[in-house]
Image (cartoon, rainbow over all chains, first blue to last red):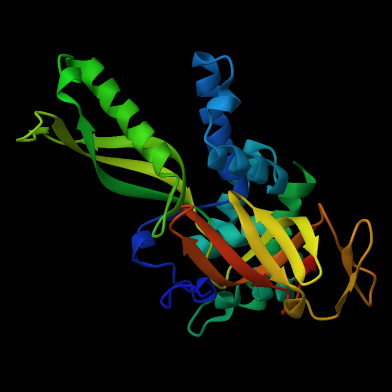
Length: 138
Length: 175
């Protein structure tokens, strides 16, 4: 059992199919999937039954695991994280796991400390404080 | 990771459905695209296919020689889920065995956390078996665990992914 050699998320290598792709946070996925479910509800009496299993399992997962439930909070989180020149993948991991300390953030996303990046501990700290504030006032 | 990606595909509309015009044709193309998308379930490259979000372009249809069906090249955006080596994720335990536990994460059911990859945890057998650490943190059924992905595998016959994960690293374990 091993991943593709060229794929390694901790080095931000996701494979060539995803070069132009956009990563989404759990809260954003929940918004998209719930909207799709509503659309189906309008045309069907038993929409959940018509949903493929992968859809249903994913919806349950993102509802359970999104730290932010309110769509406005989800938008604010993306806005805050976008100020810091993060890669798409890094942004979503931070938004999903909501680390509380700089040390934890770097453990979750080791590429934050790659050479040549203009992201010191102080900037990471500020980012985490801003995220915590969104959660507090959600 | 959930990913939004734009893809080019070909949609084939059978010739008997070609007596439709304008908006009706567009509707048949969308419906056929969504059917094809759903029945694929997952691909090795893109991961699990969750939902078509927008249909971005429909190209010129081409009639196929033998059957008279019409093939439309389309570009659309969709939502996928793929698990990557090195990624940190959270999942829920659904089975506890002597040699480790199985977790669920998003559409993936078979994520194995081996006892060898949870340092400091001991297996406790019984009616509700669990793994327990020196600091009394428990890994048992329905517990949420934060883990790091060690390896992934695409199973062609089932059209699904499996993964092995571990807790070796800081800030990993039961949440």
